[in-house]
Image 1 (spheres, helix red, strand yellow):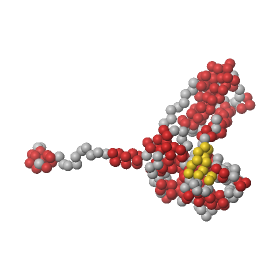
Image 2 (cartoon, rainbow, N blue to C red):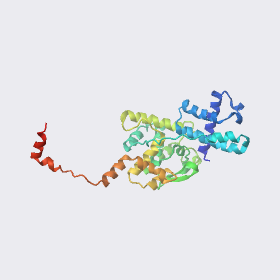
Image 3 (cartoon, rainbow, N blue to C red):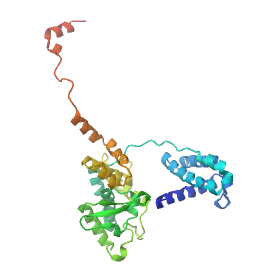
Image 4 (cartoon, one colour):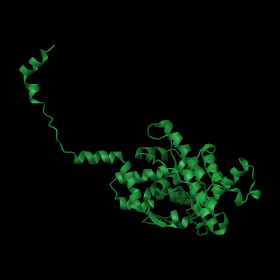
Length: 315
């Protein structure tokens, strides 16, 4: 499994231990596998949705971790096979596909105007947000970046490591590289000794976290929304920038195969989601394909004054 999957599984069992202590009054040091049943796991999944306000997709992720563990337990503890199979029979909830949220080009421009470029932190935030949009990278891919993964000479590129530890090369625009290059000079990230240092870091020079990046994005989005409420949606996340870049590439006529490669999708079928979501392109395609089948001329009886007078005479 990838490191992100391992961390997700770890978090699942940290939360499960918390649940067992708070709800069932069993501390971690006293918990044994014979105390875990299908009913306990189902109640745990209900608890994270009711108490922690998790959605169905998060519930499914936690259940996937539990399933993985109890598949392993079938071999390590076969005498409880029946109970492990009961847990494995717990089904996943159907998750409704939400409409893709993305910013227009005007929205992106407005957002990127918000960081204060007169401050060191503002310049870092501008380099970070503009890079996230330009590269269409997942937030974890950005957090894992080090200077050695960047090519700062033409052609400008970045090597991103995505799901399943698969790497891909993504081209970058010169305007983006200017912000990034200045940021790296200011923070001495071009020094040979800094090749493996986190590209984006906090005041303690530690790698930024997901929550930290989401906080920065929401802060600037809230400021931009005060200026143009219709341009910046209420709900925005780091993935919104990735969606925005994909939609803008599609609207510019870039082939779906190239967009797939930039996003790091395993199949172009996944990338087709953006084509289905783009109502503007749908309308333009329909207008181009539309064939006039209804005559715009008025019906002949409307030109017949005698007929009209006769019809109007009816009470």
